[in-house]
Image (cartoon, rainbow, N blue to C red; front, side, top):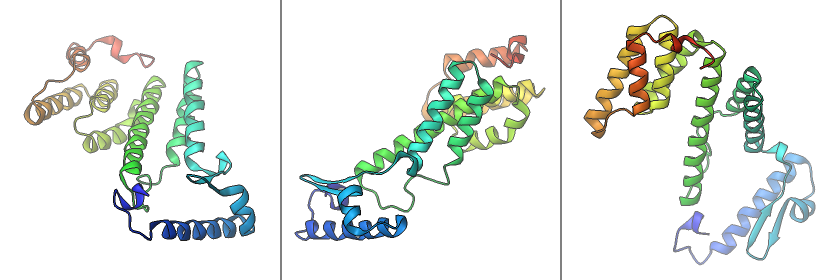
Amino acid sequence: MTELWGETPPKSATTTLQTYVLHLRKALGALWEIDLPDIAKNVLTTHTNGYMLSISPGTVDLHVYNKLVADGRRALEEGQIERGAARFDEALALWSGPPLADVPIGPLLEAEVMRLEEDRLGILEDRISADLRLGRHHQLLGELTSLVAQHPFHEGLHEKLMVALHRSGRRHQALDVYQRLRSSLVDELGIDPSPRLQRLHQSVLASDPRLDNAAA
């Protein structure tokens, strides 16, 4: 109720919700060619405090995404870097835009959308890290350049772009990436880059050969 109408739902809220549930049951029945009574009994069921949707995990893209992510992480733990990167790619390919883009959301779903967006960005970072370990720095340049433009304060993405540029023989551009980020952080947030990024900057300045190690 709160998600749909806030703290002051109308008197008709319960009846309206029941109507919504009926429409949803009909839509699910038409989609899966299941009779309405069976949908009400086995799929979208009524309980004391509300309703429960019981469907196979394989029919929900989020469940498929989570399984692919778990498979990717397990592959990385086992040293199967290429397989891990491929699983992350499959997971990310399920995204076709912002989560719940066509759904009016309240405070609960808004928090979930933020969580999903952060999770997606984290998996994207993990996949890029795996690609760097596989020596795919040239292929990553366009993607990373776009990502740092979308996330101008994200140090992890800037770090990966600096590494990819350095390994591609574009040291000066790697240094430029650092300077632009530093200026943005200082001017807009009043902070310096993290010690980790500062160390990377010094390594690029010194042309540290360890940066060329794709497995690093």
